[in-house]
Length: 322
Ligand code: 13P
Ligand code: SF4
Image (cartoon, rainbow, N blue to C red; front, top):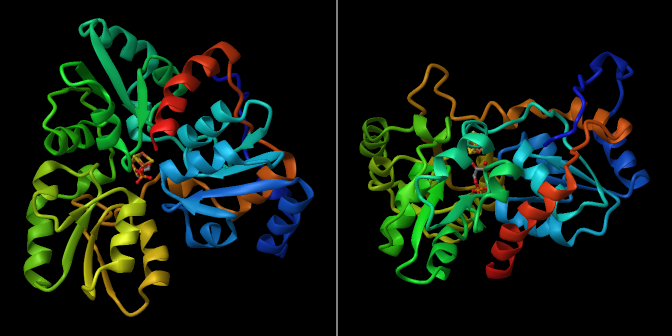
């Protein structure tokens, strides 16, 4: 159970003309805080962070942090994961409403009920889930290590994979393991369609298509490379191609541009009204809210201790494998 009281950022309490980046740096030092940011955060937040990474790298950083405060610029399940790993630290997130369609559409009580259909299965849960779902899992994975985590389970074990059906399907293909898939999806990656991506490829025949495994299998089939956010970044940084079509959340382009300023980076178009392939949850965080959360140490992630302990076990199992 999340015991956090409702909190509304008081944006009007920020003095006009305040140098927010300078204030955030000052507060970070005063609070002995570490600022962790996911690649999907706004560039101005990424540029202030002590560490920018994908879900696996961020959980590894959170696990080894010796700061007093973790300011987590990502979505709720990521900050909650940091709290599971650091019960004595203060973990704050700029906007408590920064959720995730995968985590939000797989509530723990519903998941527990759903799992009763598969009593003799190991449960591999993507880290994009609540502490309640983690507590019901055998082991956690991220998109970086999902193949390795599934392969670590003895052959012949029956497996449930939750909550992302696309990542699950891709892991099934990579490992040759059959798995029962929970029918969840990411609202950002689900918007990429094979039709639009193929049309873009036809316009840019020399570009390599790189895609996140949260995309539909029909998109992944067209890709030259499939990988987690960090793997996609590494691919762009090291591959000889000079043009890339990027089928993931467009926030990653900020780091890609820094690694390959001369390369052409083409964001794959989302087949949605806005066409923008931005995660609306990730973008709830802003410099203003980050300033407030460091100033007021709110909103804070709080967790029931017995739930935390149950959620920790499958998370530690993943970290030991990574
Ligand atoms: P990774 O950070 O594991 O690439 O996952 C992407 C994502 O959608 C995070 O919410
Ligand atoms: Fe969740 Fe998708 Fe946003 Fe990542 S990009 S936080 S998976 S909704």
